[in-house]
Length: 174
Image 1 (tube, one colour):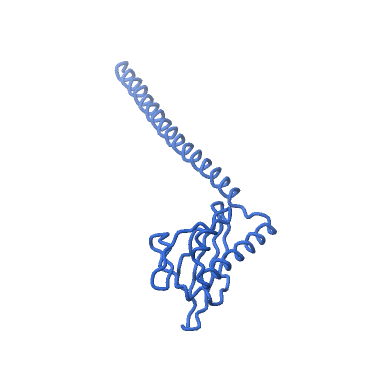
Image 2 (cartoon, helix red, strand yellow):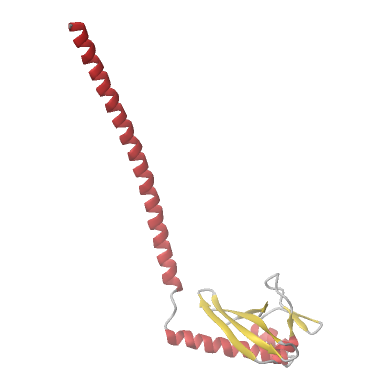
């Protein structure tokens, strides 16, 4: 009987120890999972902070400044188009310090590489503002240009840096 009691006691202790080991293992497993979740939370909090800073950097400037920028950009874009329409290419190059080539009645800016040539003929047609974007690198204004020779409009984008330095005209499709 003593042996049987001793055996039960040992089994009880061993059984209790194995449950304790299981509890310790589960605790470690949950602690590891908790650590991983905390790391993910910290990474997400860092990303949220970066996004908030980016949003602050991209916040629209006061409405009056935005309208002024639109007016200045539109004025310069129309002046560039007038110079092109009048064939004053040297004045365009010197005044705006922009590089381009004239080939077969088109202007080739070559920037960006996928840019299509801009037809000189389009510069003298009516322009309607399609979009204006002011961002930290500069301003982008796009126009629909109605072409009376075709039953469609062409879409162009003109890019300027923050100092109103003209970069190029990108030809798109409308």
